[in-house]
Image (cartoon, rainbow, N blue to C red; front, side, top):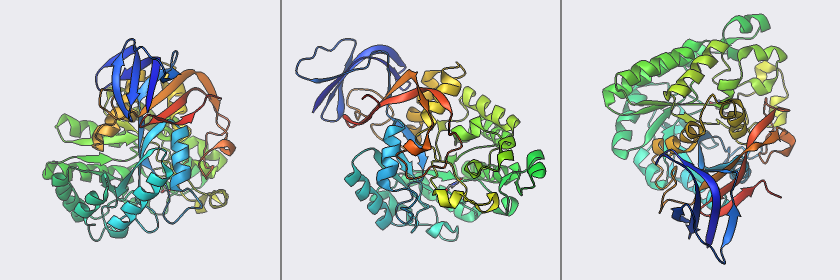
Length: 427
Ligand code: DOR
């Protein structure tokens, strides 16, 4: 029941810690943090030359169970999360059936408990069957264990439903997360609308499709005097709206995915369906605006939007493939390699955006910080080791990554949940 992590570089943005420290774990909790803890007869993990971060949290994962276990299950998704360095994942409700009632929420929690790997936090639907016609019983869903609400995969299209959801979420103290997409503008689009969609002869999804709903949600959150969260922000215009809202003191937060920071629409010249995602990969100007917003602290969180699909579904004409990118096992290495090791982003900011802030946004007690009494959820990072992205080695059931063959410096070395090692890269 006891374990000692020795000599790691402990970085905890919540307390401003960045120091070489020992961490004693007892009964699943952090019992002590000191520069030297003497040990005898305790299992000891040598963390010298490693970074010890509060357990990373992916606030936007699709687990597909119940209903589409051919794409992913709670077990395979949890294994992928553990390997990817995540101690907690929040799963979106677009399963079959949709997680719009306490029965589905409880099912997910029961299966996750049996799996016993990472913490799984269900996000329940805002509207019944995510159809934006009738609100779910939000209080009942919270009692069952939902940590937030979203109709992700789809927007909350009806503004009255969104307004009521924001109002009801307030006394429940739960976040509403919106997939901002005006479906009448995105229509039958399959990629970002612009120069390249014309060149490649593919139907476009304009930036305005996202921005119209971001603007609406900001207005509704302001009127309701509550907060709202923008899922997978992707355009320069959305960043502009976010900045203006924050300047006015409106409580709007946002997350960004690694793929929207690293890939642009010109890459679709290959018609690789693993690049087909919603919102679509935008242009280089959008990417630059997103990165700037990350550096400024305007965008609060990284999120994978892990969206597994089977090879058969993706191995079709571009127009017919489903939207989505597999993200859990590549996100950490992509961000460490492309931003942290290149000094574009500090390690502290990386951890803040992948642990501290997601814990705060989802109100996860005892998560996202390293302090006495907190859950012993820790991610150990090795900044010197490289990974080669090979989807055949994924723990996820699906293989739909556009990053195949990328060599990335920096990897999760060990994932510890409640004091238990659930993944180790060490032989
Ligand atoms: O590309 C996407 N795939 N975007 C979403 O919002 C939903 C997701 C999915 O569920 O496949």
